[in-house]
Image (tube, rainbow, N blue to C red):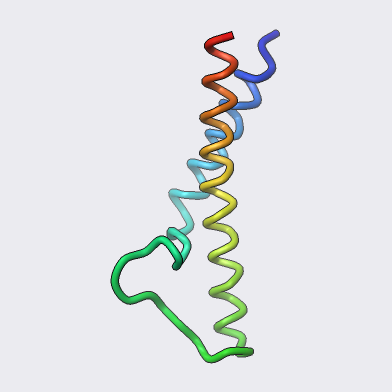
Length: 73
């Protein structure tokens, strides 16, 4: 079995679903981004939405690399 290809396609699929649902992290957006006062519940929510966006991008990138490595192998 070609496990890197299988795992890569799975990570690619999951990463794409997260990127589709979650917005890009605020660090990667142009223009005005939502902010909240430090220590507020809104700031906490924005932090976790950013983390979710980074997770989706990381899965997308790693999945693409693993699928490519498995396909070339």
